Image (tube, rainbow, N blue to C red; front, side, top):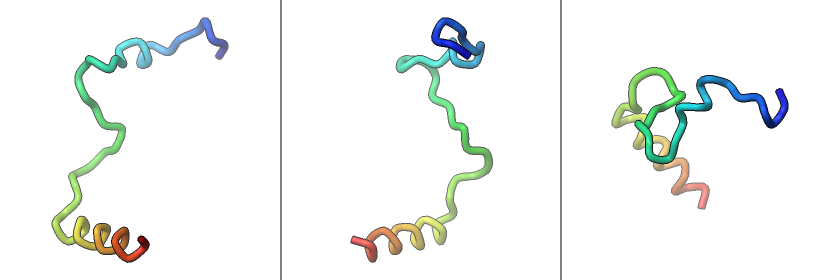
Length: 44
């Protein structure tokens, strides 16, 4: 694909458009969030 070509899915993306996620599934559980937070705090 060159710079003049575009994908239809790229056309609708805008800084002012509806927010969307590329991640499928449910948000993190409280336990998962706690574990990730502890990991990042320990790595500082």
